[in-house]
Length: 233
Image (tube, rainbow, N blue to C red; front, side, top):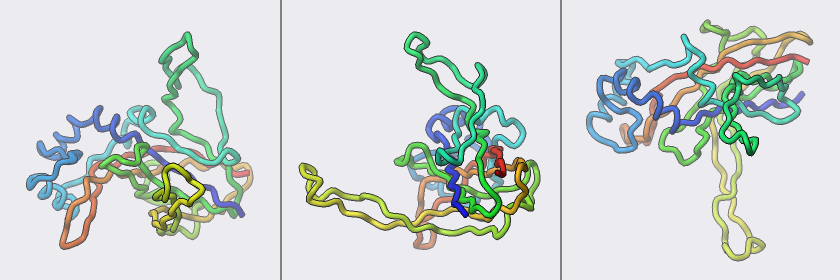
């Protein structure tokens, strides 16, 4: 059994620049993407938290809006490639062979029955004031999950990262390592060899953190959907 990590990421800054006007309209003139906290923003975020204001959803009816902003990333031995066509990229500088890939969100992942599938969500820019998190995985245009996704769990995974250098001029003196947790979704794959599983990933963008009853929280402000594929070995 192997663990297949799938990272669903979004270029939040570019996405918001493109859809900011529509997002503000949806939230009655309040810019929920703002990094500057104020009372009207607080009231709107609390109304979202309490279910009084529905989330804005993008990609459920028109998946063509997402390829320029979303990516799925996995390990090399997990990914199955497919032939890139002219619709999948645009030239930035053809004379230098420099191009931008625009259609990699429909990534095919290779896995075997019994493998553990783990989904993560994040912003391509880690210092963005708006982060992203995986909300759910389910059948395309349905609320139920594929039968092949068994032992479904929502959990926190502990990880270590290099947080501080003791001596910036001499790394041999040591690097401080901190421990943190990250939220993910996990399941076991129970499927037939040769099977293709098409499904949806719900990815939520989170608001700027704010104080709510003494706790620092963020709430979802936009929900987008992308539709990858798992190929069973």
